[in-house]
Length: 303
Image 1 (cartoon, rainbow, N blue to C red):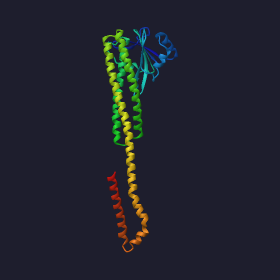
Image 2: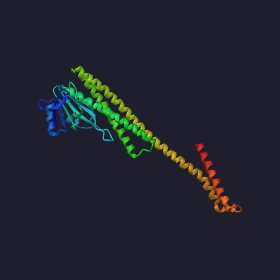
Image 3: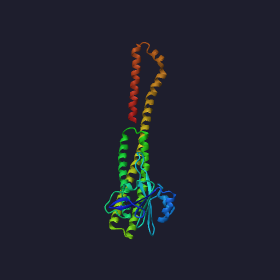
């Protein structure tokens, strides 16, 4: 499906094909891809890579157009943060966006002075960079919630969420880093080929904000890595503590069982035949309790 738009008064409006300066190609079929290859002068492989979510962000500079692939964040589904790709073919008269979802232009804010295809591209890239920053704020909140769970037992749901977010941040770091390389090359190309001062200023701001996103993503990824390691250490410490307590119980009761088995209740009754049983048996229990307590205290001090 191909939609046609025209930038008027800082906003995008639907327009006929012959007047449109922005083409939005949503999951184009084989016939549409063939038409795009013929009209734009790009290869079929480039169009297919625009729809590949695992494609690395890059930019190709041609004599009559620019082709770039950009990594953008997807909506948070409650468990992981996903990253997708879209392709852009920019010429002097037209901006063609190839993507798999129809929501790409929905986030482009109304901006004063947005009238050229390059202005629309700048707005799209800015929306994507700000989207990353918003997701990273959510990641920070989730990390705080998971840290609070460390004071109590964490169930499998929290552990799975922690591993999923850690994996997502790895993809975020790679995507933001590759986007930064695209922005740097785009700025270098613009300085050589007559981008306006305002457009170059926007690119400089995007490079700074993208670098901030990259640093934040790296920090959050390291935080989750440390949380996973800390969780493993806490589990090991808890198991070691439980084993030490069980060992102490066995050590305390072992001599008591030994004394009871050596003497036996019949031998104890024979040795205390001249004494009332209601005195001897409580005395035996008290002596064993005192001995067990003394051994427990001694073992704790030794530990």
